[in-house]
Length: 216
Image (tube, rainbow, N blue to C red):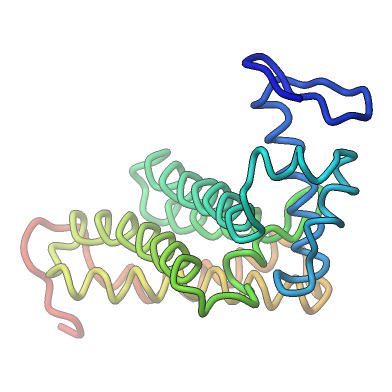
């Protein structure tokens, strides 16, 4: 039974549609992260959310629709975090620190929900819709960094994007390795080490409006 203001699942609970959708997404995230896409079942997601399957299907016609909705939400969260990190300061050393922190925080959230796996370790990445979303968030974060690199160094766009890819790629790969290795050093120490490595390289490109020549 449904209405404009809420959805009842036959178990006595009625929530506004937006609240119910949020509840279903949270339950689905737990199941997808724990089991992967292929092993996850809509029955399990409905049970985790405490609703009937008809209620689940009222919001999401199928498992892929539910997964894509989750992927969209997580991709937006990561992209917004990286953009905020860049916009929060004019100091490029601090920008690197903040971008790295954004990736580490995304991978190692306080509740350890493992949501980053939906983007970086998906077992359905070969699906065209999933691949498109993964590539989109990767490109969006890279372009945000490249915009800053190009503006501050005068490098041509391809050169700026190459450096931006190195920075964002290093951030997510190292953050995932660090978590998988059971945090062998503190997060602050890990970020400081990677920050030092990356800054030593990118600081060779001076802030200038004139085109820079790498290695000059």
